[in-house]
Length: 240
Image (tube, rainbow, N blue to C red; front, side, top):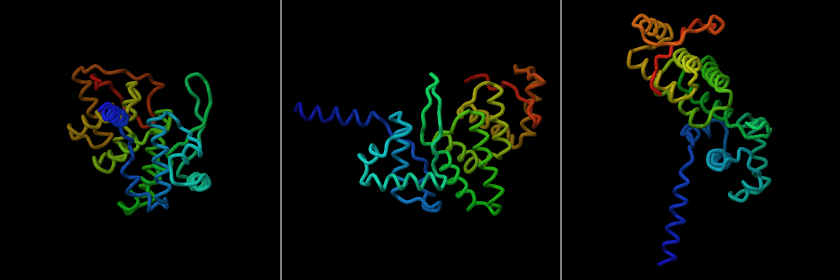
């Protein structure tokens, strides 16, 4: 009886560790971009190490201990994915000023997203460049690489919710101005605009102007903070 209870405790502890967020687009598109099943398994392990084990740069020996692949096979696969722009090694500095390296999967998500959109739209180059531009803009404003969940959220805004690039960019800049740079906050801005049938940045501007005329509390921008796109920001999302 004690042995059974011990087993149940161990099983519960494993379940409490949760799950790993593997983007659906990875499973849908990996074949089309030239990745193999072994590549994907390595990528899933990298995601797990980053999300659950706080190890952004697991050694090949550690990966080998968890996979039916040899050291050489894993090494060659990682080299191939780096060489073909699926993953990259990037330098990071923590809050204590210590420098280290980590695997960044952002290039992978860019390629997967670009491949998917390229099949859905006639003007492949234009749409791909616009999509990559959004990724780069978000990374620049966030000051870091996007997480798998954030990449999937950005893809959902475009592919499922149908928000335009301009509207997403406007919502991002609104969040930046309000000092609340998070995907949750941006999602609430987009949802509020959708409820009010706002589809363009121009309509969003007019929407903010009407709020101002009603005396809604908003933050006044300094002249030096005016964006080149002349999009006027206000702090209308008062509850976070």
